[in-house]
Length: 274
Length: 154
Image (cartoon, rainbow over all chains, first blue to last red; front, side, top):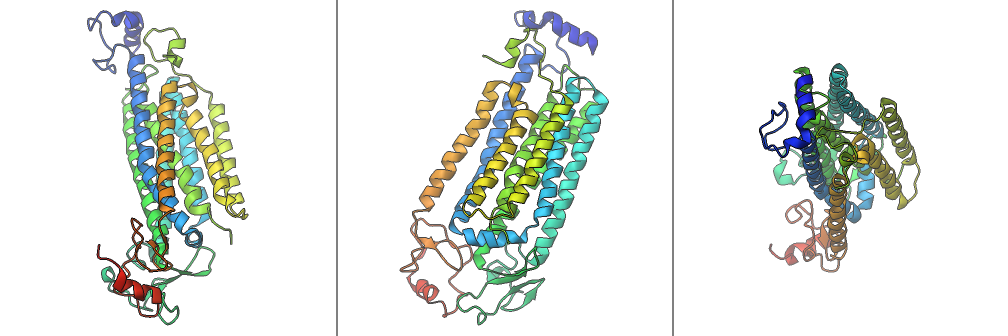
C-alpha cells in the first residue's frame, strides 16, 4: 500500500494535467483525478441520498402529524400500548451502535484495521439486538390484535371476528355495550389497564407498524452494508488513504439512528402520562 | 469552494479531521443523558407542550449525531446545506398539508376521517374514514344512519 500512496502523493495535483498517464491506486476510479476529489464526490452523493431518505420518511411523519392533529386523544390513548422501557432500551442500543460506527470510522482513519473490524462487529451485533427487541414488541402487539386488519380491519376481511368474539385479549364488543359504536375494541395496555379503543385507533397502530417497519427495513439494509464494509476491511481494501466505504456505511447507520431519535418520542412518549 | 480540504495542502490525498475516541464517548454520554431526560419528562404532563418538549430534546440529540458522529462539523459546508435543505422542504410539506387539512370538516367520532358534522357527509377533499362505514353500522348511530343515504357515491 505504501508505494501506491507515495505515487498518489507524488503526482497528485500534477496528475490532473497529465491526463491518465500516471498510475492510479486501485481504489481510485478512472474518472477522478485524485483520491481527495473522489472522497468529496462520494460524500456529497451520500448526503444527497440521505436528504432523499429524510424526505421519504417525511411522508410518514406528515401523515402522523395530520392524524395526530385530528385525533390527539385517540393517539394519547393508543400510545399506552407501547412499552416505554423497551423503546428507551432500543434507543440506547442504537445510540451505542452509532458510537461504535463513528469509532470504526476513526479507527480506519488512523489505520487501525483490526479495531475497525471490532467496532464494525459491535455495531452489527447492536443492530441484531435492536431487531430482537423489536421482535418482542411486534409479537406482543400482534398477539393483542392491534395489527391493522385484525381487530381493526373491515369485517369483510376478517370473517372470523364477530361481535363479542374474543380474539387474543382483544375483543370486538357487542353493539349493546356501546350503542352506536359497534366496532370498538377492548384490550389490555402496557400498564395493565383495560382500554376501550375506537375503530379509528387503527390509524395510530397502522402508523406505528409502517413507520417502525420502514425503519426496521433500514436497520436490516444498514446491517447488510456494514457486513459488506467489514468484509472489505478484512480483505485489506480499507486504508488511511481509502476509508470511504467505512465512512459512508457509518453515515447510513447514523441516518437509521437519526430517524429513530424522532420515532421514539413521537410514538412512545408523546401523550398524557397515566 | 471553502472546504476543509482546501485549507490543507492540496496534494490530492484525503485529509479528514480525526476526533479523539474520548470525544465520541462524550457525545454518546450526552445522548444517553438526553434519552433518560426525555423518558423522565414524559411522566409529567405539560399539556400541549408535551410534544414541543419531546421534539426539542429529539432535535438536540439529532443535532449532536449529525454534527459530530456524521462529521458535519468538519465536513464541506455544502453537505450540511444538502442535509438541512431536506428539513426545510419537509417543513414546507408538513405545514402546508397540515394547514390544508385543518380547514376541511370535522372528525368522524367513530371512524376518523373528515365529515361535515351537520349533514354527516364526507367533507370535500377530506380524508376518508379509516374503516368502511356503510354496511355494518347499526341504526343506533343517528348520524351514521343519516349518512348512508346522503353520502355521495365516490
